[in-house]
Length: 211
Image (cartoon, rainbow, N blue to C red; front, top):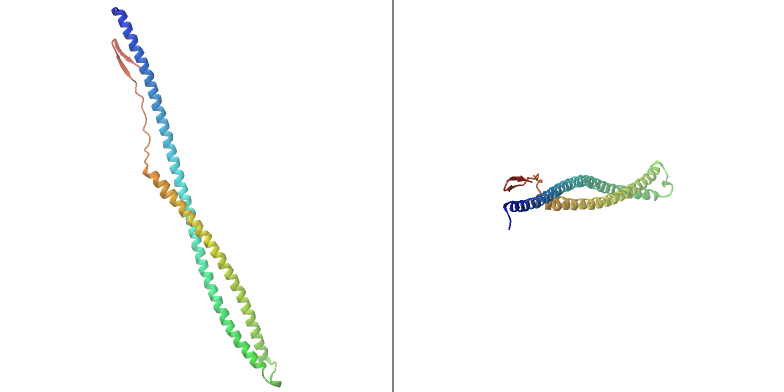
């Protein structure tokens, strides 16, 4: 049994206790909201940093790919030019070897002249010199031909290396640009909204109590 005064004190104490518990709950809720907002901001910032890093990497890979592609095109042109030169050298050698056969035949025929007719006259000397010059010229052309053939082999090895590098760069670009960034584009992360903390007001029999 209570009187109005004790009933009022009891009721008011219960209300204050409830208000205190609700205030603590509200503080915990606000702290949780703040933690979530901070976490969202951190995640948003990290998301943007990763996107920027990926975009920069894709640009670097594209630049590297373009450089390799440009160098490969120059190598292909050089291979074509060297192979053309090789064909020219082979034809020149074949032509000079045909001239050499003619010169050797003329020289051999002249050396078969009988007795005093086998004279080492100026014409004979010119034939001998012609054969000598043709031999020397053909030997020089063969040397140049070997150099060009070695050069084209080196260029072909370089071409193979560049093609492998280009394939690697294309694969890296496909993974980073099409796959990784493509997957990230399907997941849209919006900018975090600013959180607001509201005060909580509770009614009290004798007035308004604000926490």
